[in-house]
Length: 289
Image (cartoon, rainbow, N blue to C red; front, side, top):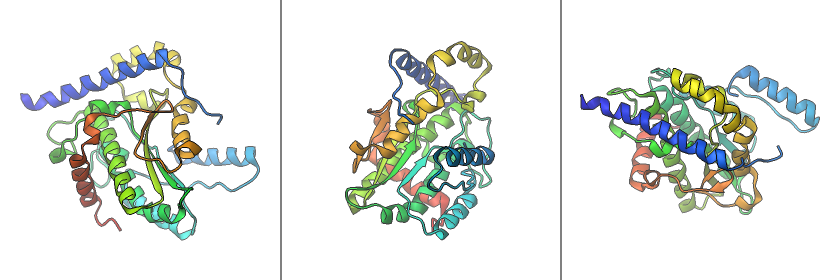
């Protein structure tokens, strides 16, 4: 019977975190800047940018982060272009999906939200290093979530095979992204590489991600979404800030929420856990290169 307890706790922790975020958003204005994960949406965005700017060059390249093969092929195509890379924003994700596996056999939240981004970043790291320079560092921005506060990392069951909980799996993936972000930044600092890594929390944003909420939660969400949830543009603002703000030049290892540095969970700063996850992740995506 006790094996089922983590599933229940994961559910409770995630919704408690959600309530805390909504209360914050109720009393605090969204940080904003003047300013898809589907192929057709990506192409439409490229077309709109070209029409509005009428200058520069923008291109859409398809990538499926739930497939390690797709990640490797994308990196090969990008490298073949011989382009520099100054900013990498790891933003794709799924939330609270029923139990599913990626084509590589990983639990979907862990495989897409975390492991796909881990491999993509590692494979592009040398390009980021070559593109950065003192006074103009390359930047990696990793999208986490307040749900990481309730996340627990079970290293001997990262795929949730003992007890699957969509809520626990989502929170775990967001905690894993933070652990990865901090560990990678520490490695870059030690090596003196001109690359910074910062994690971002977009807040609760009114997008299709909430389509997998429980029926009761869906009913509770509807009357509050327009009032309390951030718009997609507002949700993107802190990520854009992390990617472009001059005051963040050369500064990494931050957790940013609503445009400000914030303390993440005590667990996310556990260097021993960061190192263990790093080693396990490299084993899971081997060969890395």
